[in-house]
Amino acid sequence: MILILFQILAEGLPILRLSFFLESPKSMGREGGILTTIIGTIALTVVAIIVATPLGVGTAIFLREYTRESQVSRIIRFGTDCLAGVPSIIFGLFGFVFFVIFLNMGWSILSGGLTLAAMILPTIICTTEEAIKTIPYSYREVSYSLGGTKWQTVTRAILPSALPGIFTGIILSVGRSIGETAAIILTAGSSLVMPNSLFSPIRTMAVHFYILAREGISMEMAYGTGAALILLVLFINTIANWLLNRYIRHRS
Amino acid sequence: MYQENKVVIHEFNFYYDSVQALKDIELNIRPNEIFAIFGPARSGKTTLLKSLNRLTDLIFGARHTGTIFLDGKDIYDPKLGHTQLRRRVGIVFDLPTPLPMSIFENVAYGPKLSGKNRKYLNGIVEKALRSAALWEEVKDRLQTSALRLSGGQQQRLCIARVVALEPEVLLLDEPCSGLDPISTTSIEETLVQLKKEYTIVLVPHNIQQASRVADRAGFFLNGELIEEGPVYQIFAKPRKKQTEDYITGRFG
Image 1 (cartoon, rainbow over the protein chains, first blue to last red):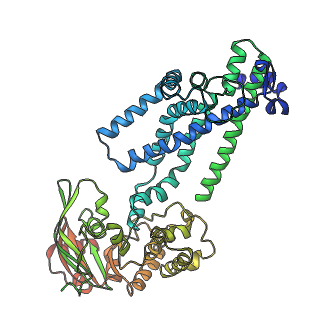
Image 2 (tube, rainbow over the protein chains, first blue to last red):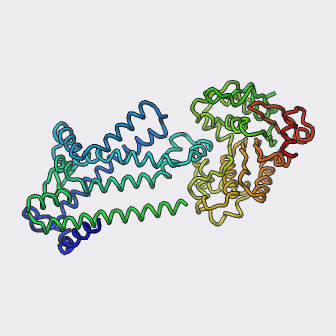
């Protein structure tokens, strides 16, 4: 693990200059920076998280608080478990057929983001369910006994306690979204043009890295992108951890 | 006849699936008295308490026959909401159950659910903490987490949390189990104070506690009410043999 990290950072860090982050790629990425791919990565991830979080958290709450263990809940859970094991390229294919062609969204941030959302949904459902499972029954009983309705109990007693767990799921999902390539090439394209709407095609950093290396455009720039990608993930995780710890400290 | 009694329990039977937990209970509870329900484990004490504010609704497969009247009105009347009932009949559980939030937020939880404004909350939190004899100990740290209080303080916090709803009836399920004698004394003193404003139904920690604080008591065995009467009579001269066996067994 450390060797891989060391190798990429050793090759990549010398490339990293401020201009590398702030300039758009030139001549297929042989020169210039990686600005459009950073924006592409962030845009896709944000769309995926915004779509998948309410859906996933909602599903988990439904499964845990609004239904008893039944045929329906077992089928839903079985479905999400299966979905979690599907290779990302299959999600890519589904996104390509459904969002890109059938819904006529084309290669775009929206198609890619929705495909990623479907891909990370099982993770969010699962981590949220686990988080809700660990909440003592007494919290619910107390909330109901003080005259709380079901909705008030969920929003005021259960969700705040489950938040750290939900957050962990989101962070895992962000990691997967940032690192994804196959599904994105099929649904968001690999354009290097600066996107101007949700319907613009984009290229993410991971896809950029793949294309630079695969097509032998520039190994140097590929490593630079790789190093930047690692730094981005590191940065996001550090911030997330800090926020999470602050929240937990505040409540105990 | 209903006007004289705060709570009237009439021909009340309660079942968990096929197990009958309460058998044909007839019991009247008068306003501003402390009524102690005592008996061995699994005799239906907690079930009766939870029936009084319909917390038993949360249990799957539970059902009842007969009725309970509060101020002459049937609490199981489908036209009356159970959230309204639970605001009038508050419960304190056997173990302290603070929610993972600040002391203030804990006490304000109930009134907040019914949409009370900030000014009202500030007033009621102080009043409730005072009547639970906790105000002096926590007034300078209302914003710290309730989880940092000691066990006895947490239990008094739970009493304050119920009192903040300004209920009419207080149900206490062994509020002193797991507490040291000093905390127990302070909770007992609190109860005697609270009696002036509320009707209290108490499952005492032991028989001595019942005789210290209660006005009347009822002895439960295997879901049946064996006998009820004023505390001085029921402990000194029980009419039924089972009651006598239980009391002497404990003392002797």
